[in-house]
Image (cartoon, rainbow over all chains, first blue to last red; front, side):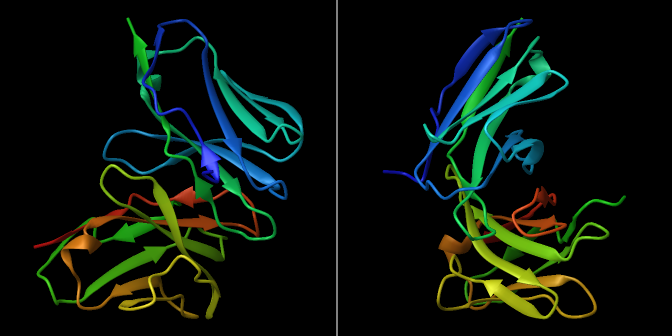
Length: 111
Length: 113
């Protein structure tokens, strides 16, 4: 079992729709969770962090965390073509301070 | 620009040469991390440093790779006797504290010919 799992996609959504990206992790002791966006040939850009169960909203982005189910998700409302990128889920396992990344979900927002 | 800085952005080395990659963290950040992204693969943790200390090097290959973060100056990732398999994007990230948000630099793309 991979430590952090994501669907590779591509996930295709029309402009203006909600994109839903999902991630599961294996280490029950994980305490901090992050979503990054990476455009092709560029570096990861931090979008959201979440540390406790529930929802956290920032503009068009909402992160959701359910530690009991070991599940993290990212919702993007009013998707724009500029949101087309690979979205990486990252987890700090247990007591360590180092990110374990999923392989990413490629999002395509179509006109 | 207060972001994480890395140089060089692109580095070409012949097999057997040494590669030195530099990283300056964001202002106010004392935690530095190095990650490697191989072509068509995910980001993998290599090493975590604070000033003058290696905190976690569990992701570093045992041979040829070393890292430091001196009291003055940038963090350095050093790869000795490079091989073609070292060709990758090397990213540095910095954080204001333990397990907090990590912000990535633009990366160094290493090509070994």
